[in-house]
Image 1 (cartoon, helix red, strand yellow):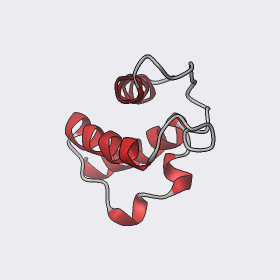
Image 2: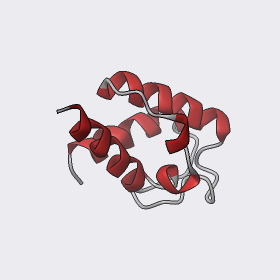
Image 3: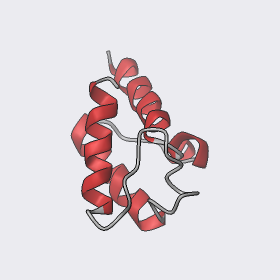
Image 4: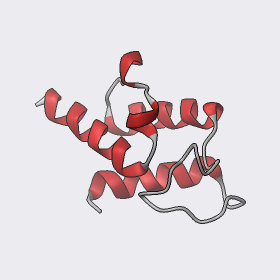
Length: 83
């Protein structure tokens, strides 16, 4: 995992809390009921603050947010476009 993946994983863990079963960077966040819609909103807010990006509404898709790895790919694209 790269730095983005690691930080996203930490952010997600903070949101879901210790009561959730362990999950990995490839866990299906919605299918496995790790995140719900409220958790997604929280995570997007944390991502925006942490990485100084603003995720566009059209990028808020199940595909982009299905796993930590997919989220990291999206975030890395936003970061690269800022350069």
